Length: 89
Image (cartoon, rainbow, N blue to C red; front, side, top):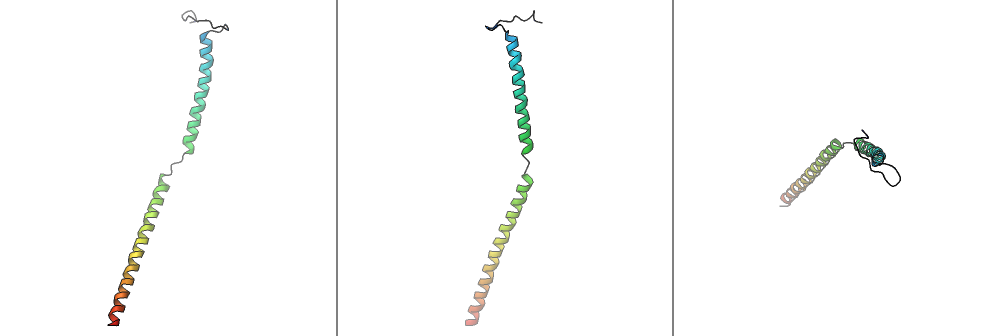
C-alpha cells in the first residue's frame, strides 16, 4: 500500500501519512469525548413535560376557584344589599 501512495516528506523527516494518522487518532479521541459529553448532557436533561402540565392544570384550577369565589361573594353582597333595601322601605 505504501507503494501506491506517494508520501511527501516533511522538514522533520515524517511523512504526511504519519501526521494524518497522529491527528486522526487525536480527533477521534476528541470526537468520542464530545459525543460522550453530549450523551451525558442528554441523559441529565430529564423530561419535565408531565410536571409542567400538572402545574398548569393546578394553576388553572386555582384561578377558576378564585374567580368563582369572587363571583359568589359579589352575588351574596348584592343579594344582602337588595334585602336590606327592601326591609328599609
